[in-house]
Length: 168
Image 1 (cartoon, one colour):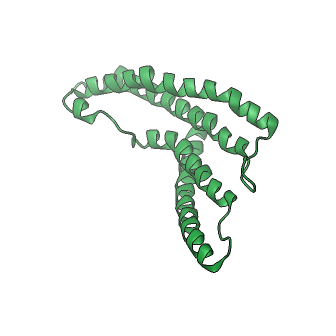
Image 2 (cartoon, rainbow, N blue to C red):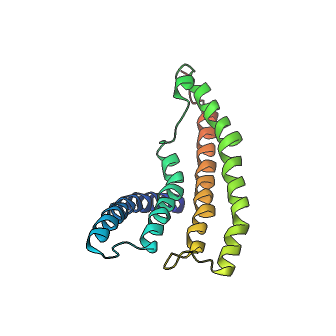
Image 3 (tube, rainbow, N blue to C red):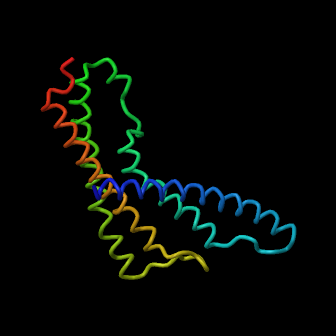
């Protein structure tokens, strides 16, 4: 399915963004002190901003992937004491009442500032910094993917319940 491939790709991108962010962060630290010792500028605003941009990629694109992999924090302490059917019901309720409204709210609220940022081709206020409109695009994109995966999870949970899931 297209959504599966898209979310897997987002997860893959997020993992590599995290590794690259760590490497750039290490370079920024080493470069700052080594540069001071050598009298050179070994870091830049672009590299510093690349760190938070890559964090955005990892975090925002990783949301849906982590949900798909069941990696988000859950209320297992409470769920483990419930029957399997009750666990499915609580998962569905949490998805419908908490996850989806939150994801859709962030998606809707972030669209206007993202559009404005694109219209202005918003740039960094720092010399040599990165374009801000690209980073701002990750917010609605990440929460759109999260909402789509949340809908998918809700449908799967509902189907499990209809099939009598958890009747043990």
